[in-house]
Image (cartoon, rainbow over all chains, first blue to last red; front, side, top):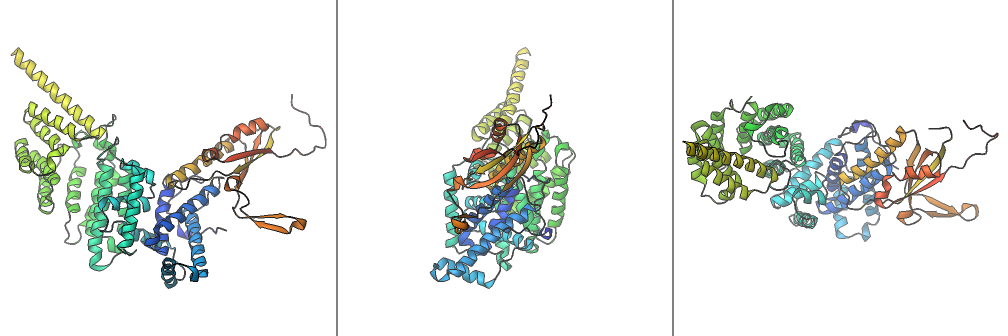
Amino acid sequence: MISVLTDENGPVVESTEPGQLVDNFFRLEAGRMVSTLTRIFGLDNIDLAEDLVQDAMLKALQQWSFGNIPRNPSAWIMQVAKNRALDILRRRTLFQRKETEISRTIESRTQLQAEPAFSEAEIRDDQLRMIFACCHPSLSPEAQITLTLKTLCGLGVAEIARSFLTSEEAIAKRLVRAKQRLREAKVPFEIPAGDELTTRLDSVLQVLYLLFNEGYNASHGPELIRWDLSSEAIRLSELLLEHAACNTPASNALQALMLLQASRFPARVADDGGVLLLEEQDRSRWNKTMIEWGLYYLDQSAEGEDLSVFHLQAGIAACHSSANSYESTDWQKILSLYDMLIEIDESPVVALNRAVAIAKVRGARAGLQAVAEIQNKKQIGSYYLLHAVLAEFNLELGNLQQASDHLLKALELTHVESERSFLARKLRRCEDAKARLSMRRKSA
Amino acid sequence: MTTEANTFMFILRGGKSRRDMSPTEYGQLIQKYLDWIETLKNSGRYKAGDPLEAAGKVLSGKGGNLVTDGPFAESKETIGGYFMIAARDLEEASEIAKGCPIFENEGTVEVRQIAEKPRPEIQQTAG
């Protein structure tokens, strides 16, 4: 029988109304359950944990389909998972002698903690342990993100495959390999402490930022913004911040950066699905609450000496967020932040963004010069934004032919529909201007 | 509901979920059931509904002494639960049963009328 827990455990996900489940209820619960069960059975038995989560959801399906959703669905489903886990542990104790080596390690592990803990605080920490495991440096960034989406965000293989425009088979393989890697590397299921925490936390922040960007700058596919991925990065980052040891200046800065960027999501896509640049966006559509929270975290991040890449990027994002109009943007301040950023991160992408700030402060010619300095670097030449930026500068300087050449080049380099439609729009305007000019020349 | 409504029992069997269903898909499937029940309630047809636990016993033989533990049959024959629904006749009840989301997962619904109780006197049907 299932005993329903008291309300003290509090539903983590609030039901919108009785008999209704919020859309992401099972996704979030799956993330919580699989983390806690992984603590009980060990990281090398993560498949067992996932199986038990599947059982719990099946049980919910069987019971709730008849219209009776428990008052605290979150506590209910965790209780089901807990009962199944305890069942397995008891059975293993019973048949210990017949059990294999693997289960003996489980046994010794669980004997240390006679009855596994299921408190809210413990469940929260389990998710952090899972974040650190998924973002372990022994895994490739791809594997880190995929494993995070599967275990912590409760996404199915098919859903992840759709997100990355790849086959389900490829994702399934990637997951198997990642879990194998964690077993081989004997990654402990814990929140690291001391010096290790600093480096491991760094790697977690990197993964969350990649996840956020995967949603923000969808590098492929029809949708410009995949809000689900970005919002998951923000949610997991919130989990980190709730833990004192993980609440560092850098993690605050990352959360600030993501919230400030995300605040512009509603204004970033035009009605036709095209991307809107900062200067074209209706600023009244920016999410004010997110900006306020972003600025709050930016403020929090200022404690201590640490000045991370996230600090500077969040600072830049804040400059945009605090400007009432594009014209009143404090480009001087933005440029000074880019000057600092390029000291720590000399990637061509940062340099390109810095060139835009230079153009704003010192004019398009200075911008062109700044781009010329990075253009020969590897990779950046085939980056569509480089050509979009060069087109912009040339347009400003009245070099219509060069502008349209760069726009054509940029079009060749991106496959995101919304970006293409934006570039095409720009190109049409450029061609119109060229046509008008030649008309004027003829009539003159 | 008209006074001439009869009560029907919908017996739901099988409808096993796919093993690889994602959490979101579980949520969506449950939501379909909830929506279906909601429309039944709004139209005054819903009377009751409950799931059955998977575990049980079958008693048979003299004095019920032959006891077997469930599950009793193949999972596709396992009864998941029942609904009590008000409908005019078997035709209408079957029509209502067609809306049950269980068919998306290869389940079945058996529709049975609760037998009419013998009435002490012949009722006047409204003209």
